[in-house]
Image 1 (cartoon, rainbow, N blue to C red):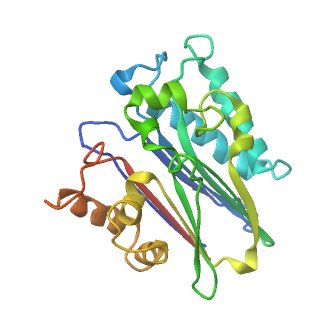
Image 2: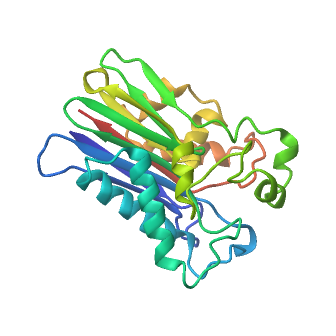
Length: 258
């Protein structure tokens, strides 16, 4: 197995709220990939005394441990337990009922000799490449399907559609959202490589249209994860770049190949 990870903050003076890891258990027969994109609260209004990086590190650490050690649990069960553990770590000091309590998008992939399991929650992306080269994107597109009127401002998004039926879901303090994730399994023989992207890295395809998902995974394969992020940054600096909510975003990319 070959794995490569890269992550870059939106700006040098700001902490990176993304989190990524790859686990390769000592048995040598499997592994796991975890990628989180922390959600930045507007004006740091989230009812919590902890930072978003604190939250993503706690959640990501729990997810990685459980994926590697608890083969008896499904990925939704693992996500639910990781959310529960993280919530318990700050339940006594923070208002976990706050609509903007620290939260994150989630991509998890776990594999053994027989199959690849996956879970995607919110707008990070998982890419699967077959031995023949075909690429499939696993997406949770609920956020993309919201009407424009729901995206007028952070306040409107948070109060009307975040972690609510008919809206979209993130990993925050409620373990039950794990059941809302996009999940599935693929025979291990049908997957030669996979990639995971936070939305700061997936801009290369989703915002700038510099290539489709197959092209994106090919950049990861031939040039590496750091190169994809560099390509995104160059496009963001272009005078022809579309107007975005924020010019730069934390950008994280992972690539695993067998």
